[in-house]
Length: 531
Image 1 (cartoon, rainbow, N blue to C red):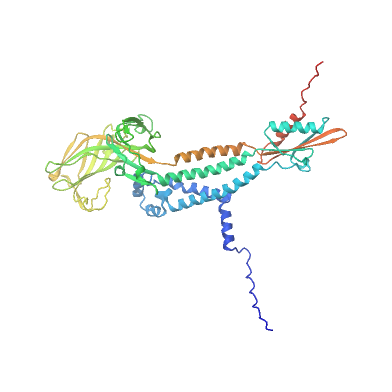
Image 2 (image 1 turned 90 degrees about the vertical axis):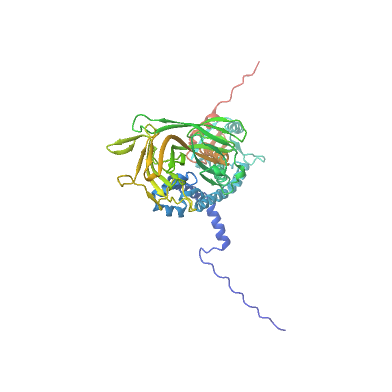
């Protein structure tokens, strides 16, 4: 007989204190992520992450302001671009906080919903053995039988919308257990669900919607297609085929100017009178587009967000031909609409002509210094420098209509040898030296900046806000209370003990007890026997 030696098994490695397996680590991480504390921290982080989007101009909202900010802060711009500060709501770090908050809220809401459902079906707890040990309690003696007191207590508590403990087997004895305020926890659940609904609504608008802008000179028509926009930022899942086929034209633009006080010369009200059609061939409609009064066409909204001036300038070259003509948008540099702009005449002969300078809506000469006194075009003036040569328009590189490339051009000089500066009032024509041609300032028209956006999830977000208010009101004003009553019969009558417990904290349970005792001690109505 042979025996086989068994190989001794190696002892399991000892686990160090605090060491977790991968499964335990994942479980711990999930519990932390779905805790209410982490949800509140993520909500705070989301609010803090949105602060740069309010302080720094966003490219998705207003690319012109974002471009001006970049020019004014050349040192910070590269850092902000790497951090995604100019597109906060589309950055990876903002999306990460957003997604973690959604997961955390789901992890909080779903388990609590099951707990609430079980609690909703559960009966009020049985009366404690010693009611006098509870913080709020009262007692009184009565000559009425115990059954009469118990029946009256049940009737009073039902009238006050308490839910009573069922006692089919009579185990409760001479006690009554009641509870109310079950909807308080429902209010908490609705509030957290509402936050989730708001997040889903905003995410839907960001993914499936778009936001664009266009600057329109008064009287210039606009049709809603991608080629008409000055800037257009679509969502990640945006479908261009879903754009509403409307068109509109700003016919007239009125500005209400302040004429007195420290803000004299500033605007306080704007009104753009426009005509629009919902689709090609549809009848025209009128609308007064104002700030905070957008026009809704289908699922698209139009907002009036800015205005300025567009001087109408005609440039003739040395051969008398019109090299450039029409309104040119000048961009405001402040609330007084003192503006900067560029005029380009690439077809001029014998050399291209570029004009760069400022527009004064209300020009004044104060001790030899040109100043602008307000935004109303009371005394408009164009002050322009002149350049000629190659404006680098044929290089193939993208060039903004608001900048003039002077790297290959030369400044035109006047008779005094200094750079020539033109000062033109409406109707003025100036002859350029060296046979370059003429510049005429014909008139001034206004332009309006219209923001056009489609946000499909805005109704969902609004529903979430309404639900949040309802849930918050329920959690604040609904009190969760428990009431117990016990009767004890003795030789002297019946002893009634009552205790109340507020599960919400901070409520005046003594007032609840006083009202219950007063209702129970009220003498029942007497009924005289008829003869």
